[in-house]
Length: 328
Image (tube, rainbow, N blue to C red; front, side):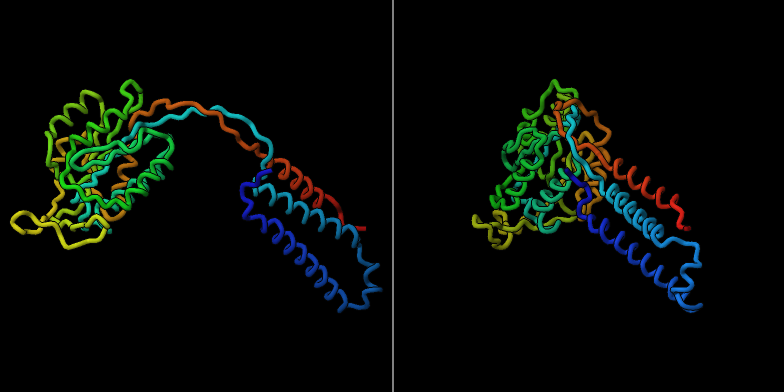
């Protein structure tokens, strides 16, 4: 047996007990008022009310409350099998892990903020297949398209300890690593979501825009970082920070978010990642308009609802408590 709202079971006990004691108190108050008129032994036989019937009415009312409240907890037993068809999008998320993503214009830094937003996105998705790609100067597919969001989240949690601050950002390699993850003949829309500061240092961005049009891949960049430039922390192999990166002339390296580069490859967007959830909510709204295809069928076991039995018994008991006359 399964009870959906088992954590509220105390209500089934507390409310009927409270009502029962209120009834006892009410009867006692009546007797106290009656005693002011004379001796109870003399007056009670003169009252046209049956004490046993009053007790029965009260008992039936309390029992009715117990059954009605139990019904509200949604008791379930017995299982039925149901065929469920899953539909969704194919969504590959590419995450920039280059050195500039350690800039701290978004807290705690661009990389960690991006990971947090992707994790929030996974919590909001339902039925869509998700794959993951990481890239800097080169790209690696770290998770194929899957419906197992826990697997995707496991890879993202591992990325929070990422310390390899590799120089360079190659958006073309990110696109090339993402394409093989898609099933080109599938009917659902194929989306490539890229979290990056957009500072592309290698490859021609025209190859992304032309390739995505030919393969019907929808490219959605998310620009990570604030409008102003930000120095890039120098991260050692052990994860400790040692000043800021400098160029060959000894000047501190400043990382700028290159929105213009992202516009060249964007099918829609680019979105600008902010400090709150506005970007995420806008992105989720836009994802709803894309075509979803059949991703498979599965049989699930569903508990049968049985609250109606308790509801019926409770109603009948309540009706009986009102129909029984308390007169002698």
